[in-house]
Structure formats: structure tokens, C-alpha cells
Image 1: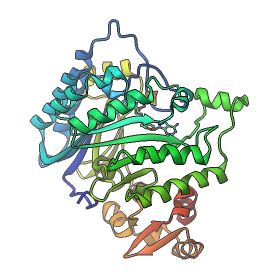
Image 2: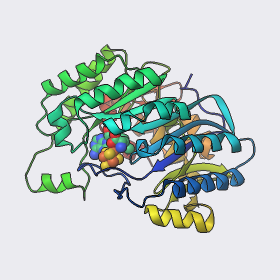
Image 3: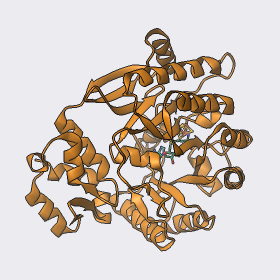
Image 4: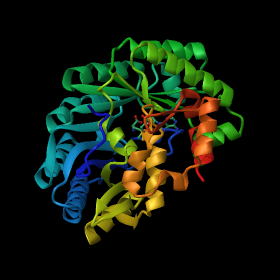
Length: 391
Ligand SMILES: C[S@@+](CC[C@H](N)C(=O)[O-])C[C@H]1O[C@@H](n2cnc3c(N)ncnc32)[C@H](O)[C@@H]1O
Ligand code: SF4
């Protein structure tokens, strides 16, 4: 059901909570650590509400919200009441689908575990747990604030309080062998989840891990080893019935994360909070929005102008490229007719069809029912592949 393409009036709401207890050395997200003392959550709630009101005015009246996603940072640091007030406000200003998906990303520390029931009562119906590893040494290496025991407690609570829940793991870590990962993933699979996000460790410039790697403290797996990790992961997940529906996301059919599908199908979504992005139609134009990245400046901005960011109008070609780049991440493939419908650009004006045939011969993609589907080999080099196909 969730694989259906969304109707134009349907949209997602993304709420970014830009704070964490501490910064993990691999993390490249827009997050900040703040002293608890003097932190007034009510001010932030007020700003989220004002931003929502801004979009309620800007967007057409017939909108329907199909997904709300609290991401971060660490939104499980929010008070359940704050989360509940935001959800209630969305219900107040928009039509909301009866089966709306409301996801919250949670870190599995004991402090946050104590709040999980509160989040469920506040209206969250899907939990995404940042377990990252089932090995305490792995967690220590990743600089995490929780243990495997706490993660297992989180998973028990998630099972008790949420109809849907997922976990994130980071693999292909330095010092992790393929055998280690096979054991870890096997442990994760034994828990019987219907959705898992499995990410290969990426080391971005300016992160502490980048410095450690550059100074020779550790060596990250190279391309060949990375591909071995990827194939092992796909094989195990296929066997378990949780095939990938996107590069890093796996689910039993029907249990895909709807919010992710909103992004990958290029449906509309608004993004609220420091550094949040949005894509939405208003007044016949497709907008790309980006909120101010620094939290306190974002807060000031919302208080002064009623919204937190800047935006630009996407050209037709940009819309086609985005629809292609996002859709190609899906193992179901990207429909060229869908890209054309969204953007008004003809596929033959931007894509080299002889190269599509060539890539199909090489085994990097398949053509089926007007769709381009990257194969597993294609997914391993997706950006290069798409770059090759464009005129
Ligand atoms: C928005 S992030 C973090 C959510 C939450 N604060 C946490 O840490 O669990 C979502 C997921 O991205 C993944 N991630 C973040 N940085 C990564 C990196 N450098 N390499 C691979 N995966 C990463 C982690 O699995 C993480 O759970
Ligand atoms: S990985 Fe999660 S907890 Fe760690 S710094 Fe990034 S957002 Fe925060």
C-alpha cells in the first residue's frame, strides 16, 4: 500500500530537533549540544507552532498530512508533551489521514527509555531506534551513550508500546570483520522486526572520525571490502524476507517507512526546525526550502518573521533531476513517466537512452514498464551511474 505514488495534495511534515546529549564522532548531521540549565523547551514549541501556522497559510487548503516525522539530532530528548502539542497542532490546521504515520527517532538510553510510553500516548505510532550496534565495543567505538542492554530494553518497550518500530545499525566499521557483522546482523534479525535501516559507516570531512582516520588511528574498509559488506547484508536480509526497498532500508512488504517514501517519490513535505529542508508546491511553483541551521538564530528568525528559513523555486529541469535522483534509490525503480509528470520535462531531453541501454548490458540497471531499476551492483555506484545517464 505504501508503495503507491502519493496524490498531489498529500504531504509529509518533518520536524527537526537539532540537539543531542553529546556528539558522536562520525556524525555529520545538523546537531548541537546545549546545557540543560536555562534551556526553555516551551520557547521552541512556540516556534514550531508558529512555523506550522506559516505553512498552513502558504499552502493550499486541500492539503492532507500522511506522515509526521520527528528527526534529529535526538528528538527523544524532547518532552512527550512537546511532541504531543506539535502533533495536535498538525491535526488542528490540516486534514490528517486516518492512518497517518507518526515516527520519532529515539536514542536507546535509559533516560529516553523512560519516556517511550509517553511518546506513544502523545500520538507517535512508529519508533525508529538508533541501536547502531549489538556489540558493546562497537558502541564504545562509535561514541554512543548507551549499552547493548539498554538497546534491548528499548526494543522491548518499543514492542510493547508501538504498533510499528524499526532499528538503525551502522556496519563496515573499522576493526569489524565480515564474520562479526554476520553475527551482529543475525542477532538483529532474531528479534523479528519488520523494518531495519542498515547504513555503511561513512566518514565525512570535518568529523572527529575523519581526523582520526587521517592521522592513521584506524583504517576504514575500502571499496572492495565495502561491497562485500553490502552483498552480505543484502543476502542475509533477502533470506530473512526483509529485502531492501531502498539503498539502506529494509522492510517486510507493506512496512516501508512512509515518510521515506514521501522523499523518494518526490511527494511534498515541509521541513521545520534548524537546518530542515522542505519541498512543496504553492501557487503553482515547486519550492525548495531550507531553514536556518543555527538553532538560536532559527528561533529568533521564527519569532521575527513567522518562519525559519529561505527558499528557492525549482526549475523544471531541477525537478526532473531531483525526482530521478530520489526515485533511483528505490529498488522498485523510478518511473520516467512520473519524473516527466512532476516536472513537465521530457526524459529524452535530459537522459541519454543509449547509455541507459549500455548500463543495462553492464548489469547496473534493468528497464521494466517504463522504469529504471538499479540492480544491486548499480546501487553500489548509484551517483556515478546517474551522472553517466544524464545528457
Ligand atoms: C538522524 S541520524 C541519528 C538519529 C539518532 N540521534 C541516533 O543517533 O540514533 C539517523 C541515522 O543515521 C545513521 N548515521 C548517522 N551518521 C552516520 C554515518 N556517518 N555513517 C553511517 N550511518 C550514519 C545512524 O544509523 C543514525 O541512527
Ligand atoms: S548520531 Fe544521533 S546522537 Fe549522535 S550526534 Fe548524530 S544525531 Fe546526535
